[in-house]
Image 1 (spheres, rainbow, N blue to C red):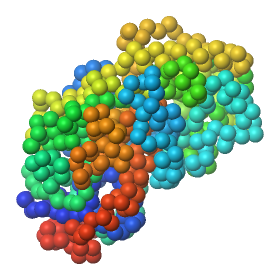
Image 2 (image 1 turned 60 degrees about the vertical axis):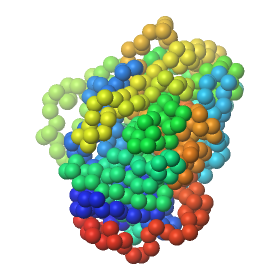
Image 3 (image 1 turned 90 degrees about the horizontal axis):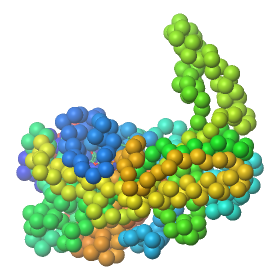
Image 4 (image 1 turned 180 degrees about the horizontal axis):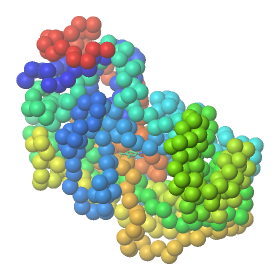
Length: 556
Ligand SMILES: Cc1cc2nc3c(=O)[nH]c(=O)nc-3n(C[C@H](O)[C@H](O)[C@H](O)COP(=O)(O)OP(=O)(O)OC[C@H]3O[C@@H](n4cnc5c(N)ncnc54)[C@H](O)[C@@H]3O)c2cc1C
């Protein structure tokens, strides 16, 4: 790999490649790494920002918002515009989509993927490795705690409740840092940093992309010509670039039916409801509280089984179960861990009297907690708090468009209008009712939920920085933007990868699925697209005239 600062590329140069990937986040880097393993083509990544964050580049991501309030309005950073993308700050929590997420459901308008879960299975396993998650089999709840908990999980199954595990690695992988080393070994990869793509220029009838226009914040401008282009700029930005590429048609590129930017979905979430456990199943610390397993952590929640969802005609919402400790205990537990780490490093003098005062009243419960965790005994926490994760139904009116204000490169900012509907809130109310009835019937616990009005704004209901659906996948160009391989309908050489292509998003955090899709796209390009191209645009092993003029500044 050669890292090139785009500022050293002479203005008006045309850089050439076989495959040009726009964006160096989870999707772009996974795709480049997989293409590199094959070594048959020259790949260029155009990456906004450098190896570290900088405020001027980050400001290119500023948006205007209307609709449901987003947490970025309170200063929350919802995406990161530099090498590694949003994996620089993500939480690392991963779950595959469920089988029902891929199905067309008659109670969910515009639902259904043009492929089923089995088409992704192998890529999910590869993606889990790429994201450095624990072994894939741990996604099955029965794989851990099998002897002790297996039978009890089966009783949940019989009642239409599906326990489901989220996995995290030992720490959330920052793909820019972790992949830097493996990408460095790829001689056919060039990464241009500080390279902001501002426009995709197609031929006049919009059927082929001719070149990309790139700008740096310092005012350099150049172009990139490739055989195949892949947008991997994240769930909002993929749509923004298509909409901004309006030189030949005012509605943008790949948008003859006004679908680009529509169907924007999130995973709204809210702390709501409390379970008072009656059974040990709901007391095991290793089930609920980020259980340590080889290679990372697992964390359990509940949703309705696919069969039950079909019967009750609800969306695929999910209840994350978190131990509810008495007030003050979680903070005291944290202080206790800090005190222990000081003691271990013989830095006892750093421990302050107020730390001891905070911990002392809770010492009994803290030691009980750690003992139970170590030996997997039930913990006596009084209740379980519920973090509710929503699935959103695809909705044409929930959308991103181009706003009136411009960024520092002269491009129109995004205007984000997230809608949360009555159907989505009603599904949560139904889920709580059914889970409550069934937990009580099984003698596991009592669920308490406040009265909720689906017409009202629920305070605390917020987004999760998961941007999905704005360039959705499908077979019908009137209702979708890309085909099942990610190829933009009607444009012969432009692919999109990332959560913007999800037709529905289930409740699952999106990154595992979007990395699986990026790996699937690499497979498709290698198997079906690149070999069919007669002459590579670049002769392998030789530098093109355009890149010879732009010496690498960070050779590896
Ligand atoms: C705080 C936070 C917590 C999260 N937690 C989780 C979690 O626990 N689990 C989970 O699954 N997901 C989580 N996510 C979401 C996750 O980070 C994203 O799903 C994932 O990073 C998306 O990958 P991507 O490659 O599509 O986009 P990104 O990772 O955002 O990468 C996009 C890349 O494109 C570049 N780019 C953008 N525009 C241009 C342009 N015009 N020209 C050139 N380059 C451009 C950017 O610089 C960036 O490098 C979280 C996100 C945030 C912000």
